[in-house]
Structure formats: structure tokens, C-alpha cells
Image 1: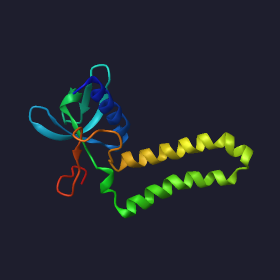
Image 2: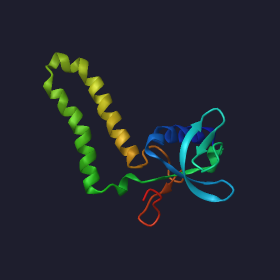
Image 3: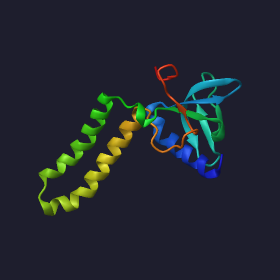
Image 4: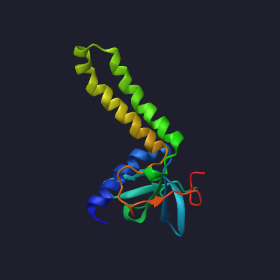
Length: 143
């Protein structure tokens, strides 16, 4: 794993922490466990292991469980689109002059909401294939 790959995975896991991202790793044995933090200085990931407050592994030893975008259901696609479009529709309330000032903020907010929604549903949006374990019906640690 290159330093660039490690950095990308650390950033991705950091953004997913509020949503209870689970990873596959080796900690005395192979396990699927919730990631509770990351340390960019030591390239380590903190793990939610009962009775072990110091449980951590190196980033190259974890793979998050994520859903490919292609697994999005029609219902989820509609919800995601509605969320994104709702923010953009807010711009119609402003005059052309006001919209120029407000548009960048509104666009950023809609993007932020949209990305957080994707993270909350455990969709992969930046990691290359092979850097994560694909969540399937049969292989879903979030159930």
C-alpha cells in the first residue's frame, strides 16, 4: 500500500466515523469491528474492542465494508436526488443578484449533505476497487 493509498483511506475512514464504519482487520484473530478513530501521524486505526481501550492496527491492515454506488436501490436513488435537489431549489427564492452571492454556499451545502448521506449509507465514493470489501446481502456487517 503506497503512502498515497494510506492517506486516502485514513481520510475516508475519518469522514465515516460518525456513521459507524466497520472494517475487516487482524487483531489477535481476523475480525470485523467498528472503527472508532484514526491517527494520521502513526497511520493507525482505533478499534471498538471490548475491554481494550488501546486497540489499534496499522491502516494497511484494514479494509472498510462499503457499498458500491451500483448497489443503490431505486428508493435510495430517489432519496439522494431529492436531498441534493432540495438545496438547489432553495436558490430559486433569491433574486439574480442575491443568487450570485448565495449560490456557492448553497451548492457547497447541498454537496456536503449529499456526501454525508452517501457516507451514512456506507457507499464508497473515493476508494479504488480492492481497497474495500463490498457489502452484499450475504456479507453485510451493518445488519
